[in-house]
Amino acid sequence: MKLIEIISLTAVAVFAASCEKTGNQNQNQEPEVNLSETVAGTYTGYSTAEFQYSPTPMLSQNQTLTVTAEDGGTVSVSYTSDTWGTFTISAATVAESDGTYVLSGDGKTLMGMSADSQSEYDCTLTAEISGEDDFSFVFDVPAVMGGMRITLLPGNPPVELLVNGTYTGTLTMSVMGSAMDPMEDAEVTLAVDGSTASLTLPAMGMGTMTMDSITVDVLFEEAEDGSFTLSADNIDAVSGELSITGSLTGTVSADGSTMTINAEITPGAMPMAINVDFEGTK
Image 1 (tube, rainbow, N blue to C red):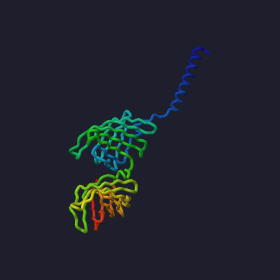
Image 2 (tube, rainbow, N blue to C red):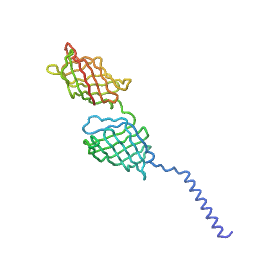
Image 3 (cartoon, rainbow, N blue to C red):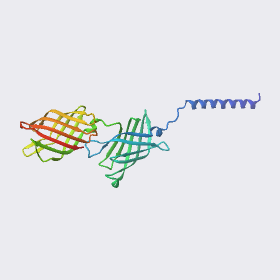
Image 4 (cartoon, one colour):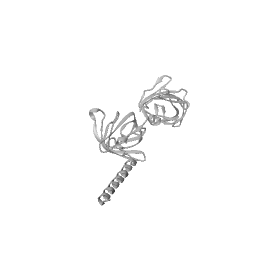
């Protein structure tokens, strides 16, 4: 066999082996995952708003946020809150670690008391996504209300987060049908822990018929219509040096925004009960 033929056969064999090896590598190689397309979609749930001047987070239910894949592997995030305004993040990065996708980026939010009074503020986003029902999107707005943080979470808020807090409204007192002047801006605080709760009524009364603030242990239950009931058949509380007895019923709306209370309370040895009615909002 001539030398040129040997060289040609050798070249063909090497080329064939190389093609076979490359083909095997392509078959075994994992397909490249586009992280931005993996996290793209619509996320629904509830949001909490925390800021310096609010002792408890403010809730918004039935919230929707959209993540859109961009060229280059980044994403845009769009969220319009019916309470807080519009948040827009572009070119947010996406990383993956142990099945959790981490998003981060900077953007803008339009906020204001009305559409005509909105202003634009800088905001930042950090988010973690482990599934369509396992995520958190956190927007930080440093220049609003001493620093505002809005968090979007999946599903419905826990009952305690929904109803706990201070309700402000009108409280009226009457004795044997004779009513005193109503107390405006009266505050009643509810703290729920499972099926039990404590209800704190404000100091009330006038002249010699006054009582310090009292805290009443109440039974907390969900009603068939989604609202919540409060009840105490035998109040055993203390107002200053007075023992307080009586009973109480009340309701809290399904969204936790309003409260009504009716109570009959007897301070110390008073021969007749005081009727207390309250209507307030959170």
